[in-house]
Amino acid sequence: MPEFVQFLISGLTVGAVYALVALGFTLVYNASDVVNFAQGEFVMLGGMVTVFATAAGVPLPLAALIAVVVSIVVGLLLYWLAIEPARDASPVTLIIITIGASILLRGAAQILFDKQFHKLPSISGDTPVNVLGATVQPQSFWVLGGTAVIVILLYVFLERTVLGKAVLATAANRLAARLVGINTATVMALAFGGSAAIGAVAGILITPITLTSYDVGTMLALKGFAAAMLGGMGNPLGAVAGGLLLGLLEAFGVGYISSTYKDAFAFIVILLVLFAMPQGLFGRRTVERV
Image (cartoon, rainbow, N blue to C red):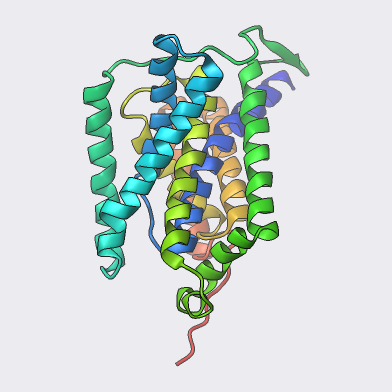
């Protein structure tokens, strides 16, 4: 039982980070139909900027806020300088642009920071907590709680605010949204900035557990994209469910089979699911009128 609980909490903790990355993918995809493979770099920026700001003597809460603001600025620049000028390009071209942006951000981080792994202090200290016989780091609860808060805030924003409804309208039909007076360019910029902020928060929360470096964003982007596909691309609920499920698959696969195939377990299951349900677990089938 303690072993099962240990794997369960570890899986949920890592899955919560995947869920946040997948939410970033979903937010941008809904608003602009762009699959932003630079999403993982915002997680890296959140962790690295916080680490170096605290090393410079900035208090941790202020350093975290600076990291989120820096990530938002980078996300907006990505949209204004790369995505907006190519808004009429094909989806493949836009994907290549985001991959290029990811490589650029990774190279810039390597120059501005360094190639070492870095760790942030845990928010509640490093004294383990006993949960049903399992040893759990207090930071895991901050990751899970932070993810829950972000999901709730995003739901409230989308469902209860005028700006949020504009995002939903743009996601449903961009042309119709423009016809009723919605500035879709502003909505898309908001989506890129919001996804960058979500990624930065994920990086800040997970760095005390998994460490961070200039190149951690690549695998996180792949796992976040896989989680979004598993849950149903464009579905926020599916992104969260897909991320948590992906984390659990990894944790139990590593625990009960072998850590050698840590990344393979999840992707094999995802391929099986997508072969059976190409729209994902929570995606909707699309019907095209001809």
